Amino acid sequence: MRDSEWQKSSFSGASNECVEVRTANGTVELRESDEGHLTIPTTPTNFAAFLQAAKAGEFDHHA
Image (cartoon, rainbow, N blue to C red; front, side):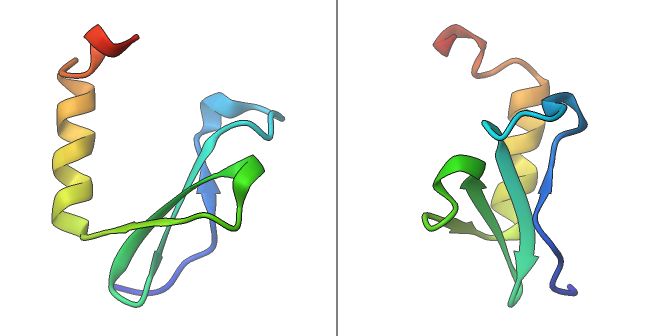
């Protein structure tokens, strides 16, 4: 896994209030764009499971 630059969803538009993601040192890192100094590291496997759950609607009741 190569390290990458921070990326945000294309749905965010020009907004600076979004979640950004990148790969670094074999992990996936997440951060809120307006709180860039705080990052959440996770494994690629856990991140993939989170994305699958989100796409399946498992977190919709939290909205």
